[in-house]
Amino acid sequence: MKKRNSLIELYRFLLALVVVKSHGMFPYTGPYIGPGRIAVEFFFVLSGYLFLKSLDKYIDLPVKEGLFKFVFSKIKTLFIPLVIALPFNIFYKILVKDYSIGIWGYLWYVHDMLVIFIGYYFIRKFVKNKKAFWIITASIFLVAAILHVTPFFYSWGYIRAAMSISLGMMVSKIPPLKLNRPNLLWIALVPIQIIIILIFVFGNNLLIEEILDLVLYPLLIYLTFQLKIDNKLFNYLGSLSFGLYAFQCVVRPFEVLGLNNVWIMFGIIVLLSVLEDGFKRIYRHYKKKKLVTV
Image 1 (tube, rainbow, N blue to C red):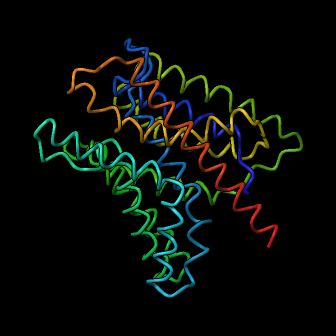
Image 2 (cartoon, one colour; image 1 turned 90 degrees about the horizontal axis):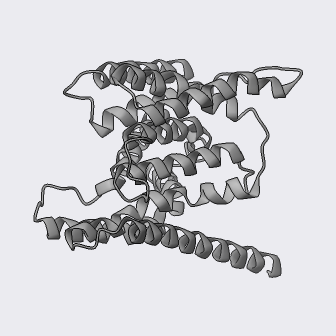
């Protein structure tokens, strides 16, 4: 199993909670902490930062085989939450009688992320020249960033995904800082963390949001990955993050049905996240044990 960066895992958990709160399913419903929209951008940038390592495993395979294995590698850890959540999105569509609502619901970001990933798979597959590939990546980022600040395209998921994933990819190619004392990274990292917390607590405007997306998140991820932090609690909390995000879909119909107690809804989200993570851990343990006995 790959060793995690525990601080990144903590970020994932906390920002997943921000999204849950923004949808009204967290016990605290006050004006502070949010909006969830700017939390999602962190997951896009992080996905882009980690993207190339996973892509390179499959790029030399035949197109269909490589694409299948690549997509499967991306959704296999998300499979159980998706299978559970998507039927509830369909149920919600039926309840509100608005068939224009997509079946992805709150999981739109997974769909849009996969579309951008698949697009980059084909670019990487057929653009062999590395310089040309990065020129294309930078161009996609610039076009998406320009469109993102226009009122018409501002909320388009594909634009947000293309911008932030491309940015994360480019940041991943920046060489790490060479410091004799790695702890000096905290001098830069702590102020960034404080600024991000202040933005989430006290609100933001469009300009601050763009600074967060284009500067603070990339810096946060870039610097954090250069620290070796291993904390079992943070790792566990991080493993719950996608469940917290996905299982909002399960309780979303509750409000329509008149069962909109936030404590109950949040409790169900947490319980399902814990159970789903527990199932995966049992499965991995059984699979590892089976391989050892063979």
